[in-house]
Amino acid sequence: MHSEQETPRAQILADTLDRATGTYLNEDKSPTRGVGGIDNRGSHFYLALFWHKKLAKQREDLELAAAFESLAAELAANEQAIVGELISVQGSPVDIGGTTNRPRSSQKSVMRPSKTLNEGASRDPLVAVAYRLPILGFGPGASLARRVPWTQ
Image (cartoon, rainbow, N blue to C red; front, side, top):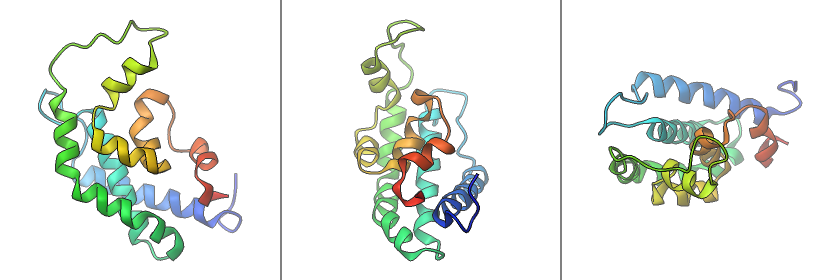
């Protein structure tokens, strides 16, 4: 494991994720139990939103903060549209092709129904990681460090 001196940007990512998780919990953005509230897809959006905000506001590395400012602002500005897109697909059964060896295309359309958020995820590795967690089956730990060039 790397020390803070070896990879200070990785430590900033970890610290801001910790603070974003606190915001997520304080604002109660956990999935709701019923149709019409945010589900796992929505809760992952909020984690990405809060993480970007924390990264943009941190002052330990101004270059890193600048890298996240525009997408943090874009996600915040589109929050209602994204949440609306995610909620609008709830309540109807979906055939995803079985429980094993499912086609990725059917998973993708079901698990990532927000066009607005997909556009952000295509441009930013942290949004992609947070938004794709349910599909990829990994957390933002070691695999994130390999995907985000700022941690090198």
